[in-house]
Length: 101
View 1 (tube, one colour):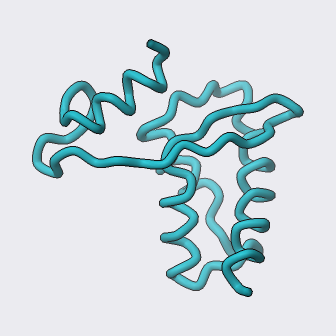
View 2 (cartoon, rainbow, N blue to C red):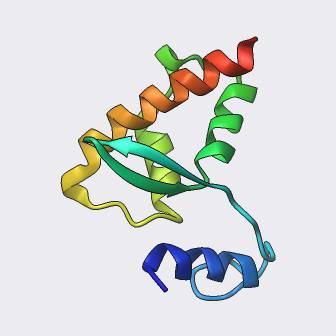
């Protein structure tokens, strides 16, 4: 089992890196293109929903905060961080456009 799977399993069963006070949580896993490579990101849809519900448009999203939230349950290599930020912003633009309709 890969690191992403172990992290998610820990979240699901309330062990490893999950918090026992919050109980188990289930998060989505979304595949996005980062520098023409597929990357699976856990919790992306949930984070997008938080930003959308708060009225955040793609122009006023705090990408640094969003990435910090995603790194809580995802292992993101430092060397790919800038490309990930661009990809996540593009994904949020698509998400935001779809939810506005």
